[in-house]
Every structure is written in C-alpha cells, then in structure tokens.
Image (cartoon, rainbow, N blue to C red; front, side):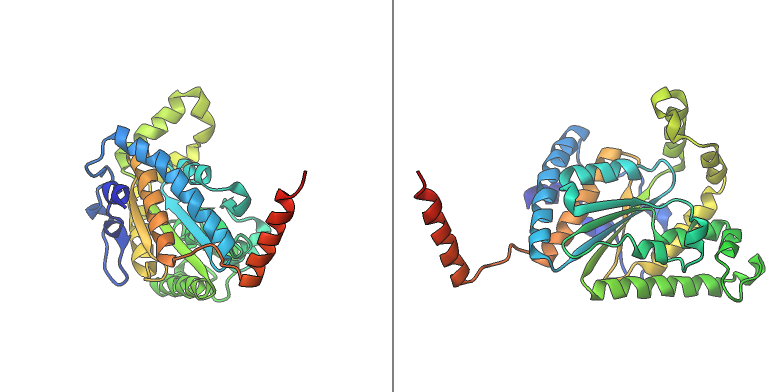
Length: 298
C-alpha cells in the first residue's frame, strides 16, 4: 500500500528479540518526511482501514487482539487510545486503564486482574498500562512489591536482580501462552522526551480545562526519570519476543505517534490473512431462496 510506505517503516520501530536496544538511540521527535498536514490526512484514512480490519476480525472469529500501551506520564496514551477507538466499533473493543492495585487485587498474583480484561475471540482489548507496571513502577519503587505478600520476600533486600529476571520470564510465558491460544499481542512504548513532558505538564497547569489531568505525584515521578528509562529499557529488551514484539513510538508529536501506531496495527492484522467466512453451496441456495421470497413481496 503506497500510503503505508509513506507513513513509516514499522520495522524500524520494532525491537527485535535478543537485540539490546537503547532508548536514547530512538529519536522521540522523529516524523519521517511527513508534514503535519499530510500526516493528519493519513490519520483520517487510517480510521477507515482499522474499521474494515476489525469487521473481518469479528467475522473470522479465530483471533483475539491485545494492544498494550506503556509510557511515561503525558506521553499521549489516552489520546492514542481515543484515536484507535474512533476507528473501531466499540461493541467489539474493551478498554481497560489499570490504576494502583486494590487490596483485593493484591491478594492474587500480579497477572490476575489482567486475565480478567483479556479479549475473547473476535474482540480487541486495549490495556492502558498493563502487567508491565509490575516490572516498571515496582522496579523504581521496590517497596511496592512487599504489598504482594510473596513467599520469601520479606524486605526490599530480598528483591534482587534474580527476582526481576524471574518476573520477566513469567511475563514471557504468560504472553506466549496467550499467543499459542490465538491472541495477537501488540505492545507500544510511547517514547517521550523529558523536555516535551515538561511542556505538557505546564500546559496542564496553565489550562483550566486540563487541570484535572495534573497531579503533584506526576512531579514526584518525574524526579525518577532516569530510573524509569532504565526500567523500561530492561523490560523491553527482556520481553520483546518474535511472537509479542515491542514497538517504540516517537511520541513528541502526537499526530505522528498515532499514525505510526495505526500503521503497526494494520500491518499486524494484514499478516494474519483474516477474511470473511465462506459459506457452503447449501447455504448459498438458502440465501437465493430468501432473496426470491423478499423480491416477490408486494
């Protein structure tokens, strides 16, 4: 598709399995050769593409799709979700935004609440934050792990590098099991610069209509920027698998980020070769009979 070639090389966004990736090597402000005006035109066209893809996915009823968004605060996750939703039929999509685990959720393993939000066959689930929070925010704040009451973990000193490596392995097993059972997993990290985050935070403070989006906790977490970048880098490198790859999306320009995301999703769907179910000769005959009856009505 010519337009797809004009958008972005999705292969350049994909983190290959086994390859050590450094976030600083990815340009957060990359927009290719596109102008914003042309990008917005393509963005509008992408909604129709996504709608057509979803309709086939639902009718095909063999695959389910899990789309994961992770990012630093103000990277544009909510806006990206809204764009994707505008291209999909909401009846076949469920969006879950994961917040701080509740006491009830903490009484289960860290996958439990995410299992409950998985898509059925023919459906799409979008997770705004995900099970990766358990190797991201907990990596920066390991004291949160203590709330999980895990056997053998009695203090922060017990949370060693081996603990995190084991958790990465658990995630890989979890996702591989989903893929083996027909779930397509697409994972996006919206890569925002610290400078752009500052700009967006100031906009939220200065614009009364955006005040509700800002929390003083955002500033506290911003102080851990370096630690979060390291945590994301390690998690992405450890869990970007051929069957469940990570895509690093330049996020300083929202229009380009949304366009790149739509392009990746469309490309992944096309690779599935999904199509509308065919019907038998008997069913075709029944359709023709029904048509004759309908056209013969006065």
